[in-house]
Amino acid sequence: MTLLDLDPEVTGRARELAARAAEPVIALARAHTTVAVERATLRLAGITGADTTHRAGDVPWVNRVVDTIREQCGLEHGSVLPAFHALREHDLGSLTELAEATAAGQIQFTVPTGKDAARAEKAARTAVAKGLRTVDRNRAQRDKLVSKLGDPPQRPWIYLIVATGDIDEDVVQACNAARAGADIIAVIRSTGQSLLDYVPEGATHHGFAGTYATQENFRIMRAALDDVSKEVGRYVRLTNYASGLCMPEIAVLAGLERLDMMLNDSMYGILFRDINPIRTFVDQRFSRQVHARAGIIINTGEDNYLTTADAVEAAHTVTVSQLLNERFAHEAGLPDELLGLGHAFEINPKVPDSFRLELACTRCWRARLFPDAPLKWMPPTKHMTRRRVQRLLLDGFFNLAG
Image 1 (cartoon, rainbow, N blue to C red):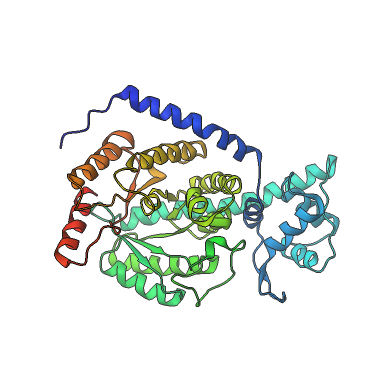
Image 2: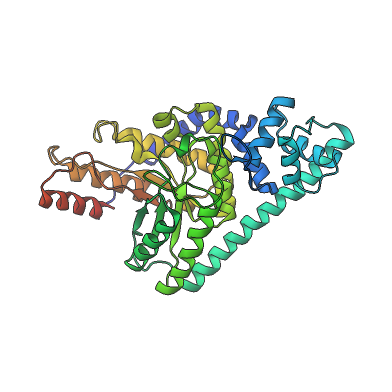
């Protein structure tokens, strides 16, 4: 197939402009933290579980600790120094004990200085390093399983969604899908979870149009897919969603439970959930650093844009976003092979040369701009008709381009 004859100077200039546009956002993200970043850090340090006595429902211990630190001494210096200083000052044996004492109103957090700060920093680094070793072991285990079981023999990989709301039912559907040929299982989150400012605890069975993203649900599904991977003779990958208000925490939990792919793009929260853009760009950088460490492929959210804009008139905005996401990802440490860029061209049969336009986009992105990055194609939806034959033809054209 003939490649698009793109001017290297033009593509180079486009990347320069993307880097220039991204730089103020990167500088902001480097200089700030958020409650979600601090909760994610304490999860790496070992905090698990929830306060089950709260009248409004279970409250994760990380929320208890970070919220109290924020009230008492602010988060400008992060949460680990005050937390590990208090752990030593009160002679407590674990961060869970610290969280329980915090909930009981027995802890007054302060930012340590001098030798106290050095001791707290040393203890915090040791604890966080232990969590990162778990992430590293999971990455090595994935590589070992892929080497032993093999990758799917064909490309593109087949991506299938489960979304029952009940993790046990999701497992049944996911395993059957893998037996039928699915290479990637995506567990859709429950409606509205992106706006929850906490990560629920434990296995869940009551999601709405999806299943809650929790550490235990991650563990259950990963274990089930490991079993079915051995059965079908290929490694079946697991996807979830690191977006919304708990983006950094969900990224950490994914690393701790060996997920393989995560949808991860702050623009989803900005455009569709009205999330504070400053907070979510800070969260995005931290989460992508975690994904880079864990060897998790991210999927960016360009496929969302064309649900609210015309695919032909707004096609250039997809390329702009991809270039920006490339810059943000590289700065956070993600190599091209972990940068799954999104796309969802809406093939409209009423538009002349619609398929040729789609094919041109695919050749531009795959062969010229991002030859080493995996691309995620979402099927057309907006211009689908009720006529079965035409619907199948549109699907076929889309799959051909993919």
